[in-house]
Length: 251
Image (cartoon, rainbow, N blue to C red; front, side, top):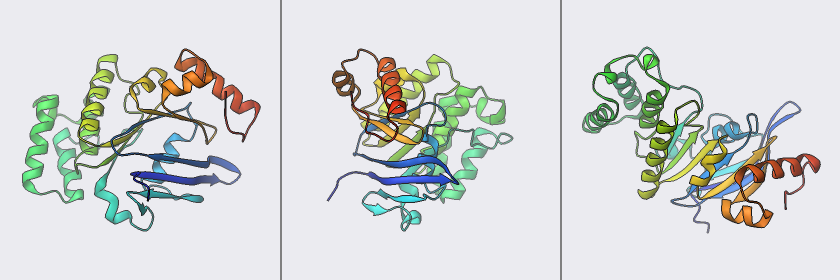
């Protein structure tokens, strides 16, 4: 029996003749950070939405903690944390009000909510916790969104381009948060189109035109392709994929 916390098995999503996700398979082990890399429109967000039950697959299966995801969605809900690519907070509510609202949806008790609010205010400052999140700088909005993603203490966390549009210091802080989560035994998938962030992950998935074209630790992939940088690997794999669509990408 597999010890994977996530198994994606021959997953596809079609919109008419368009294949947003095309026969994608991969797994995630406990305590692993998986970096999902690809240009805009590669299928990263659609794949994450299917895994989290926000859209249904056309074909294939998702297994979470050994269970069929579609059949056990309510049982699995609190074990997953999903931070979406787009701003998912209510902009007219304060950070604390957003926290209270989503805590109510998750059914968190008063003691837990009091602790969560204190942690959030310590992180962003008490005064900033009292203004509408729509007025916060992008980096702080992402901090609030991450806090909401982690409210249920999930075991498996999905972060869809969490550092997009933020300054370098906020990006570094975010990756420190990600490493702390890994140290706690969490498993994470972080999607990005920033090539430099792949070096921070345990394993790389490269998607292009809905297909998974590379899967493996970055250093091993660079060695097998006899290349020196993530940028060279990215360009070479995409060019190979476009020359031979549908074939397995090899050096």
